[in-house]
Amino acid sequence: MNHLPDNLKRLRFRSNRSQQQLCNKLSGINAVQYGHWERGVNQPSLNGLVQLAELYGVSLDDLILRKL
Image (cartoon, rainbow, N blue to C red):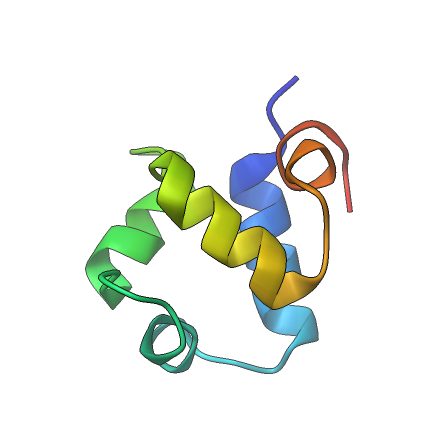
């Protein structure tokens, strides 16, 4: 099961960041695009997934497949 949208929202809330604040730390990602990821409208590229996993200190497997 893909837990990515819920995990993105949950991790962002835990870090006390707005979508815009988070996007300021990511290369080439804007708040509208990130919002689509949180709602499951679109999926991030592999590069986006890697950036998110590194920012949050989780593995790609955990980010996508496990409920965090």
